[in-house]
Amino acid sequence: MIYKFKSQAAADVIMLQANGEQMLSIIGKERAAQGIITLAQIPAAIAALQAAIEVHEAAEAKRREHPGLVVEVEGDSVMLRQRATPFIDLLKTSAQAGKDVVWGV
Image (cartoon, rainbow, N blue to C red; front, side, top):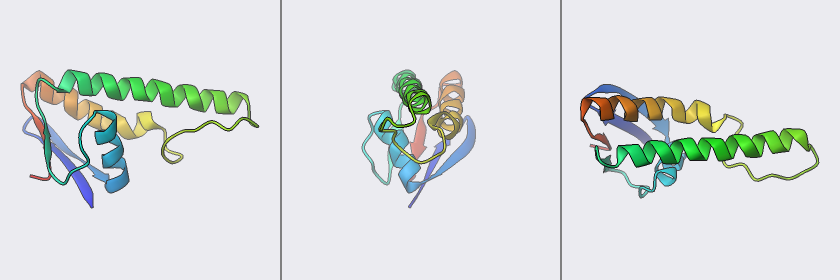
């Protein structure tokens, strides 16, 4: 399955299933084929994504500083910041335009 996040204010953001579900999980949304992030929910979604990015980068930095240490980092070798930035941009642009973000519609 592919997640296609859409807004009337910006270009679509398309993610593979695992990555789309990771974003939804971070922002507290159910992993579903369809959904909406309302205008009122966008600020909290952005804050949650930014907090997750900070945690991910701190874990990566700790892992690099201590190579023998096992540190759990969710996802693959792509940094969460790289994967989440287009989604965050979509959320910010949508908020500025007063539009919701939907997927699967």
